[in-house]
Amino acid sequence: MYDLPQFDSKKIKDITSKVLRNKTFKIGLASMVFFTVLVFYVGMFSTDIFRTQINGVIGRIQQNFLPLPIQDQPIISNILKSSEEKYVSPISHEQAIINSVREASPSVVSIVISKNLPVYQQQFINPFGDNSPFGLLVPEQVQKGTKYQEVGAGSGFIVSEDGLVLTNKHVVSDKTADYTVITNDGKKYNAKVLALDPVQDLAIIKIQTNLAVSEKTETFPAIKIGDSNSIQIGQTAIAIGNALGQFSNTVSVGVVSGLGRTVSASGSGGFSETLEGIIQTDAAINPGNSGGPLINLQGEVIGINTAMADGGQSIGFAIPINIAKKDIRQIISTNKIVYPFLGVRYLLVDDAVKTKYSLSVDYGALVLRGANGEAAVTAGSAAEKAGIKEKDVVLEINGEKITKDNSMQNIIAKYNPGDNVALKVLRSGKEITIGVVLGERS
Image (cartoon, rainbow, N blue to C red; front, side):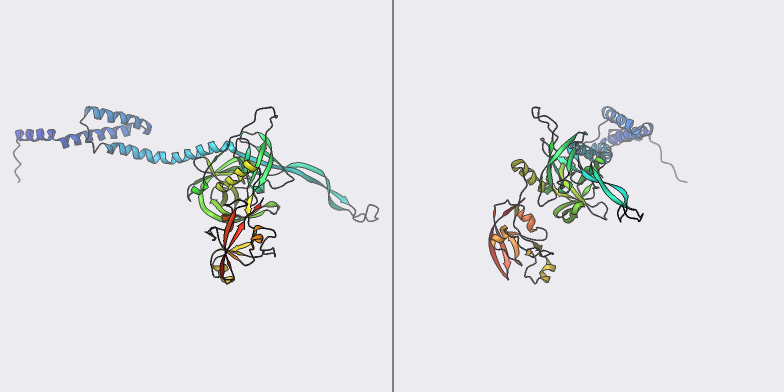
């Protein structure tokens, strides 16, 4: 049998007194009381009430008990803070989308295309003539006048308070059609096509106000213009437009999926165009969205929705807004859109082209005839005047190298008609420099 130690009450009192005077014990006791009360309130109240009550409990503990050491105080606040951050973060992103759409939507318009179309009626006629003894009748479509009707729809967005609207060229390219702009608040206006971009799938139209000349000028909400050079892959992208020509100001959300794409776009009426430096997005772009804005979370337009991949899913394309800025400035200052024009057909050189044509370089633009025999150098163009020849390889323009990622078209677009540029050209194995005065393409 073990002997129990003798109970010394005086010694116990001394030890207890020392413990109570110990600062660490006081801290532990205060913490224990706090968390006991904390557990009680968790069981008694819902989450919202709990947050309110726990703040009061913390205050009472801090007033009636010894305060926690400074280095331990953030622990409690961090517990609550981390919980709130996990909850608030996704709501913040959602709210940013709501805010940007709310800000941009008043500037987005639907564009309705209308024209006179022939009306056909089926009739039965005798192919051998009305006086024929044969009673054979066959059906035939016969035109019975014309009917003015809607034939298509697209989107656009207002870029100036006086009613300039930016859209796609393929939306307003029919010269025999009339165009009506429907604003976000349902008002309808006739629209006049001011200019079609000769290179990009862009156009600018002007809202024709219904006010008399003597009345005050009507103003429109212009969208905020962003900077497409600052776009990053993965950032949120929001497309707004007249989806399917039926659902105006439809919103779809995605991300920027790629940058600097080159696509060959085609549409009804034989429209076909190669677009370079294009934004790719997985935000849904449907027929009717053409010409509508692609915006960021600040409500700024960063692109003009222009095409979708046929046969693909969530693969859409938009023209960077920085390309359109030049068009807007030119319309405001000169009422037309012009581009510098060199006047050559070319094939960008890569390893495959280098091998096929036995070239000594793997970059540049090889001047060649078109697939259907079109001239390599346009008659009367700046290139012809400067002496550019078929099978020349233009390597650089003003010291800027021509590559697959930086085409001749992109480089020339940086200049204006009438500018002098120096071309570094490879001809018959020798490099020469040729000066060119750029022409005008409108």
